[in-house]
Amino acid sequence: MHTRPTFSRFLLFFAAFLILTSPLTLHAQATAAASKKGDLSVYSGYSAVWPQYLNAPNINSGVSFGVEYTRHLRWYLLPSLVARGKVAPGNTVGERTWGGGIKVEHEFRSFRPYASFILSSGNITFTHPVIDYRGKRYTSDNSIVYAPGGGVDVDITEKWSGRVDYQYEYWNIGTNQSFYPSVLSFGVVYRIPFHPF
Image (cartoon, one colour):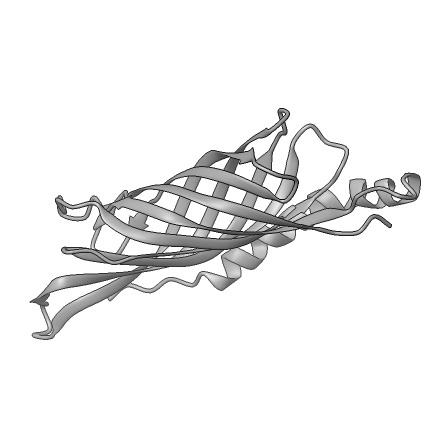
């Protein structure tokens, strides 16, 4: 079984992001007396996963869900902190991930294209387990999952958007066993606006 420390990397990643955004945040608070501070969004959708593990032949159907906090700074790209999970059972392998990262987007009228990077803790389960070198059933394993990706939100109303999202995942479960699932998701986003201050 393969385990790596994820929490320390996760904290380092977020600390760097907060340090980079804090100077402009203070400036914006000093100059804008009644500006919008940020939005909190929740997301859920259907995910099609191509496992790419030992040539697994099937596409797994699952769900993705998450929470995002978008900071309204006077930048061309709006930064967001993202927490996201995915559950995708399958006939050969099943995958579960939970983690967080950053997203940057730019608004073009009703369209909000974005790029993201998610760092997750991943668990893979094997529908037909084998006996490993210790004589035990090899039923599951885990990995840090690196997932660059992107997508677009399309505004339907002021608070609701449709979303198409793509993630390219990198898994490594030890003994040089790496695989690269692709995840295509379709879902909805609900934005909870913060009151101006």
